[in-house]
Amino acid sequence: MKYTLFVLLVTSFISIKAQNQNISVEKSTFGIQTGFLGIWAHNETKLTNSIALRSELGLDFGAFSENFEESVFVFLPAIIVEPRWYYNLNKRVSKSKRIDGNSGNFISIRTTYHPDLVIGSIPSHLNFISDISIIPTWGIRRNIGSHLTYETGIGLGFGHLFKEKNVYIKDINFLALNLHLRIGYRF
Image (cartoon, rainbow, N blue to C red):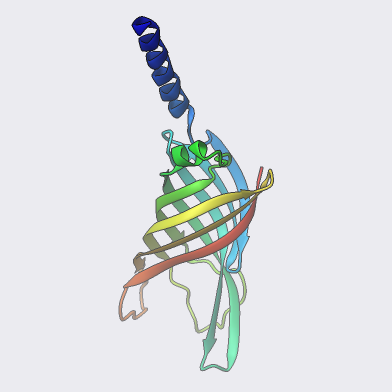
């Protein structure tokens, strides 16, 4: 009887351990997302069972006004690399919640580069300066049905403007905010 109970406990432990090892982010997932400030195409590639590397190409929306008279609206190309740690996958599975499409809570380090390009027209006396930002971010991603997703995140970090010749910039370093709310389609 003791031997049977021991074998049953060991088998249960091995089974539970094996199930936890199968809990993982997806090997690779592709999608598009849009929010009130742009549109992006993304890929997430599995690095470990709980870490994925997200890469994005997109267009960030920008608006500004000179002397509050005429507003200018432009799109800025964005290149984003973001390692994400999905820290609650085991908890979601234990509560019978979905983790497909990397649905879960995450902590990331979002690195965004805006090259010196503008899609749209700006006055000839203005010059867009390229920048980079590195922002630690907390966020969530959830599924709506089989292919639709929504995602939100918030973070505060560091930004840097790349100074150009003959351009005066008072401060090339700045505080950067990542506040996003997106809806998307996963392929």
